[in-house]
Amino acid sequence: MDIFSFSEDWIKKTNRCLLEVLFVGVFFGFCFVLIISDFNLRVSSICTSLVFLIYGAFIFIKVRQDNARQRQTKVFTDNDRIILKGGKTEMCFFWEDIVKVRVIEDVKGNIWTIKLFGRDRKTIYLHGFDGMEKIVGLLKGKISETISVQTKRHRLNWQSSVVRMPVYTITGAMICLFFILVGEYFWGPFSEIANEYMIHPLVKFIFGLLGFDV
Image 1 (cartoon, rainbow, N blue to C red):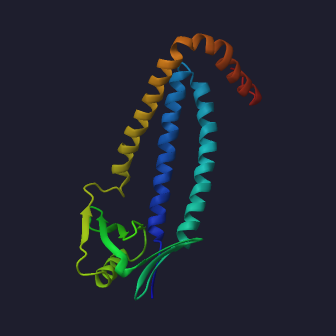
Image 2: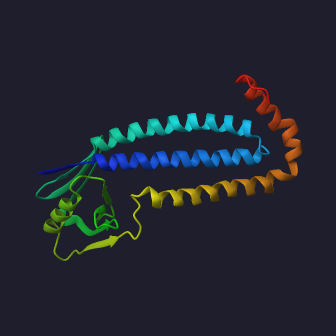
Image 3: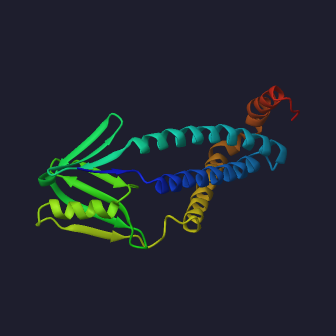
């Protein structure tokens, strides 16, 4: 029986992606608050700091949980089956039950993801494990010769921050713009009333609790 564990390099790259999402989200959150607060830099900075602390704590907890779960997850290959096991979850395919295999490679030809499709429409996704090439080699030797292994290669290097950050930035800008437009459309006609009787008193109350004068 062969056993494959999650790659520590993959775990580090996943953590880096989450940190990038965190910083991009906080940046556009700051821009959004800055715009809706009529460019009040002080209010925007304090609100963004609070969001950063809360969101950062959430990301930190999620990273710790995901890392622990990934390190517990293993792939086992035997003479008659392949098993993906992590914690209380276990998925198993007998070799003869696999009807399609799809392999996705990065721009350098390294295996990114292996997708296994079974007769009962179940699917097993394998990504981030050490020895992905060896897993593919085992699959080719175990599954029926009538089943072809489909291979697809990414055109962009998604493991590079240089590629990911522009995508995050464009996505964050579009989400920020969407909320601004929606807010202007639905809230604009009532902004003066809302600011006088709802928003401004609420902001004053929150900042008063924090010891700030708005």
